[in-house]
Length: 273
Ligand SMILES: C[S@@+](CC[C@H](N)C(=O)[O-])C[C@H]1O[C@@H](n2cnc3c(N)ncnc32)[C@H](O)[C@@H]1O
Image (cartoon, rainbow, N blue to C red; front, side, top):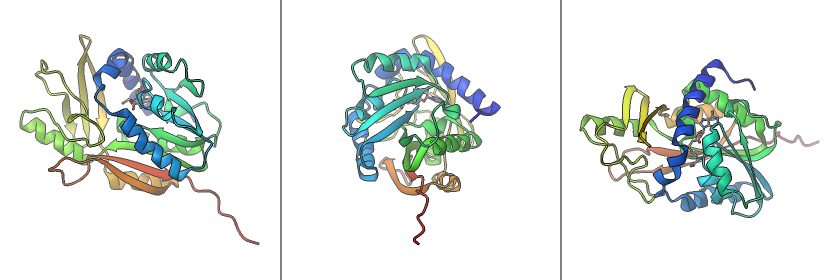
């Protein structure tokens, strides 16, 4: 697939952000319990797909999730990311892991053949990087590379999370929530020396995420997703919704602020003679 002009703009902002963030990424998120998170994903993979499986992690970054998933038997893994900086860190961690291949690529134009993966994982807010028209292009590309019967498992911040951020900003505090799967209370921690908010709200569904790392100010947009709309987009692409897992709830939340959605590309139906 050829990436659209819009997705190229979105991707180039993300690429710059993550190239600069790469040396700090793992330390920044060191309190995230990736083994526990990967175990949740793996349980789904084991239940939904027979082994051996070929799995793509789309946006594998420094390999925080990929390294965990690769430890499980019965599967081979491929990691793709647009950021050479993130992949460089990932490569150094996977030196002794022959089952894992890495490639630098834009997810909107993957060089893989059609129907070559049993599962595509999009871990840690992948879909939130793109406005809805780009998300649809991404779904198309995922659909293309999945085998019939394959699954797409991905998590995203919901519009409810956006409301929490707005509230927090209005009250002059950093937004925080409890993330049961992580051992941290804030998924985007900020250093105490930072006075400015780490998010700036732009419109109803978009924020600018701002990080100060290594003496630099890094920014990229984040788009929040209505779970009903996401389910509709999955269905419109042809995915059957297998499961929705609310990964994040805080004690006062009326709705999940992070959802993992699992969609299956159906197998062509067999007609009995
Ligand atoms: C939040 S990080 C998540 C990394 C990893 N999955 C994890 O759980 O730690 C998102 C990653 O997606 C990558 N990414 C974003 N847009 C992309 C695109 N269009 N093509 C390829 N990679 C992309 C970024 O470079 C970044 O490494």
